[in-house]
Length: 183
Picture 1 (cartoon, helix red, strand yellow):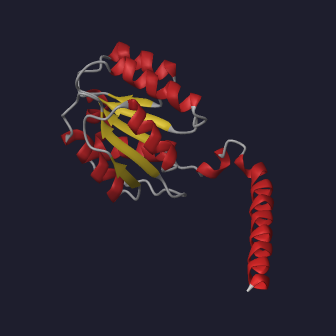
Picture 2 (cartoon, helix red, strand yellow):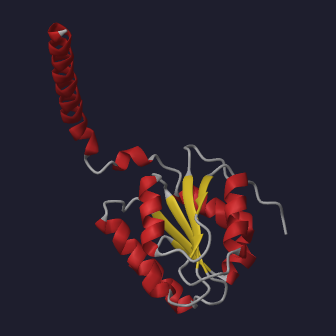
């Protein structure tokens, strides 16, 4: 197999990686995590047996561009769809979802999940055709964007928040002055 060049991201890329709930098989996600890291991505690894809620909460809190999951235990259709729905519901539709499960996730299920909105589910055939670095490059290319463009309207609230802090600071200064005048 020819040597695949490592994709060079234009932006800082962050991923959350984990193995799905009730899944103790974490060897594959550990390999993918290490290749992501050696390719320049920052990775927050949650380990195995992780719920959708845990993964989505972490992804939002850590402001990542992507989630990479393995799922070898079955239940992957519901798991990935719930993850997608929760990201939409919580205002983080920009976070891309990637997954794999060896031969456990059937081609028809991959098609169903990707049609639903999951960015990419990698199959054993993808591994043979693309190689591990090729799959990682594909993930990095699709997540090479700045997340601050998707602040869910928070930028417009910053002046209000600054005003509130300045008002609180002004009130605090008045209270300190009053206390100093009393002594």
